[in-house]
Amino acid sequence: MKKIWDKGFDNDPQIDAFTVGKDQELDLLLAPYDIEGTMAHITMLSEVGLLEADELSQLLPALEKLRQEALQGQFEIHGEDVHSEVEARLGPLGKKVHTGRSRNDQVALDIKLFTRARIRRTVEKVERLFNLFLQRADELKDVPMPGYTHLQVAMPSSFGLWLGAYAECLCDDLTLLKAAWDINGRNPLGSAAGYGSSAPLDRTRTTQLLGFQDLAYNSIYAQMGRGRCERTVAFAYASLAETLGKFATDGCLFVSQNFGFLHLPDAYTTGSSIMPQKKNPDVFELVRAHCNRLQGIPNDIRLITGNLPSGYFRDMQLLKEIYLPLFDEMDSCLDILLHAIPDITVEKDLMTRPLYEQAFCVEEVNRLVQDGVPFRDAYRQVGEAVQNGTFHFHGQLRRTHEGSSGNLCLDKIRERFQQVLASFPIDTVGK
Image (tube, rainbow, N blue to C red):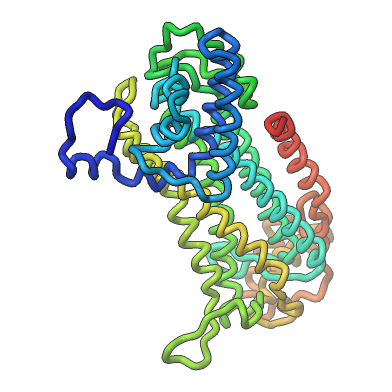
């Protein structure tokens, strides 16, 4: 295997295999972005006089052809990595495209461009899921269900209130995704190996060409961003994973016979090899497991990078193995929930069951308070009725304050989400 840093000696094959690791496989994910970065870089090189105009006019079409190959899954890596493969495929002119760059800033750039594209895709799916939660919350706003604390029956709730809660959680998750987008949106290209270059580079120009929000100005900082940026993005995805995982856990509980709040179509369940009656909610269980794993990724990244001094180290190569796959894993969870949630049905007469009568204890306390009984006396009276087995509630639920089951504030939640969504400069990036 010919290396771009070749010094005229052959490496031990076992050393080669160990140091290359999974780079060739993972670099295929980065190939379109590596090529885009090279297109921007050589455009800048031409503008500062380090590449002839006729050379640029030959290189750009050749790179676009390679980019299309990569987008269509036809690009192959025969050399050491994607960077050396692109150079080799460009022929003699390929020897000029690395001026002012190092593989350090090149791979940092590739990962940021990849990340930006994947965050954009995630945001689109989160928007769809948010709208779905709100739609179903509105549909089911008047369908009561018991609320629990400590897994004990606590107070009356509604399916609308439950689903609206997850919609509002997604507002927070989107806010963290925007923060991750911003930190990811600083261009490292031109920082070279972490100490800049004597070539007359115009880093502001490549920042404009690639649609970044700003530069990673300090060249050492640009290298210190490796791992730091990935960890920040992974934290945002871990927050989203926590939301989805909690919803999946609710789903596992609520479809069980002991609860019976929700019903999944048979096609969404699996069976048992020994128990003929089983209809298992494996969809929810697997979403929960995937989301638990996703929540561990920030710590995995920290364990690789946390004790490294400034500068580049080969340890960072392992980040790709942890980081790049998380986006597909999150996509699979979002996709399956988007597919399943519309077909979930709910039990509409839950609160008529004697089991849930004590959920109305606080309603009775509040009724007595409004009749002039001091709260603590009303609390004691209702508690004694529960102890004596004489408690019954025959009143009406009066929940009208903001965020209660009678006033879900779905319009306010939608407004908050839309404000965060509008802050993503996706149109600018597209241009």
